[in-house]
Image (cartoon, rainbow, N blue to C red; front, side):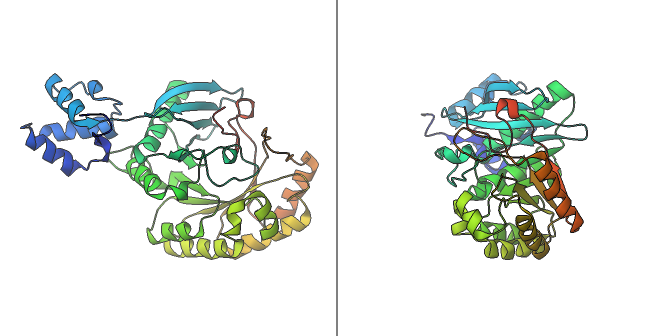
Length: 347
């Protein structure tokens, strides 16, 4: 059977694998062994499943495919951030980042190979979207970054953010499937409260998250607090304007009561005035946001944006705090290896 014709074993449910094993006359306890290798012991091929007989391993290999991510490149930043280039079974590259700090170790994972949203300040936005990542490939990103965390920090991941390449809500089924396995007791058993999905703003799918009663946190990449400016830098705003996003975020919160964060990159002379801050406060007051993350802009080759001076950034922050906005300045990590926010581009 050709590789293309074989079914990916990780697309099968436990019941489907049980039926297969029964069909080839295997004992029932093999099901649990195989399931553990797939989701808890993190085998990346059938031959690694060392407590299965050679015959069974050969049968599995003959019957199913087992596509998995491999680490292709690893780069280390002076600030201890690690950027990983993963290679997919069909030869594409996608990036993930491991961000350690004193209190937490965060994995920043991708959901698509490239992106279709064309945000003007983001390196990934200048790439073509090759395809969506499958749910098991997203799971592999987390597993491999967790292994790196153990290797370099002797600690497991504390947090996962879907803030890498791609728009998670345009790969909804795979992202939800990956999070199910990441949080499952027979998967990585991670609390959904430690997972944040970041969106550029797909109103319809934000509402879908509410209907699905997800338990993870949501972040909106806002970056401009009026439609005219947001249209300029984020073309998605033309079909998902601020009014529709405010409505969707309120709907999401009403259904889930999950934390919502607003992400706001400061650009010099574009969105860093007191007038911009006042517009941001107005939006903040219309939604149940816990936090506004003010983010340093990280320069990319394709765009002419600059970050404001330290003085201007401090004044912007002070204005927000004076108006009782829970705001935090997020300093960039991994800039020297193009691993910071908006810099992932498979260089």
